[in-house]
Length: 90
Image (cartoon, rainbow, N blue to C red):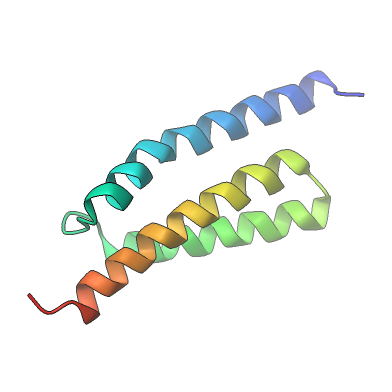
C-alpha cells in the first residue's frame, strides 16, 4: 500500500530526475561539454552513486529508481566531459 509519504517521494524523485534530462539530452546530442565543470560532474556523479547505495540499503524504491536513472545520465555526461578534456585533440 502506498502512503502519502511514498507518493511525495515518488513525485520528488520524478521531478528531480526529469529536471536533469534537458542537460543530459543536450549534451548527448551536441557532444559539447565546454561549459560544464569536470569537478562538479565528478562530485555530482559520486553523490548520486552514494544516494543509490543509500536507497538500496533502505530498500527505498523512489531513491533507487530515480538515482539509478540519474546516475546513468550523469555518468554519460561525465564520460563525454572526461573524453573532451583529456582525450580529444582539437
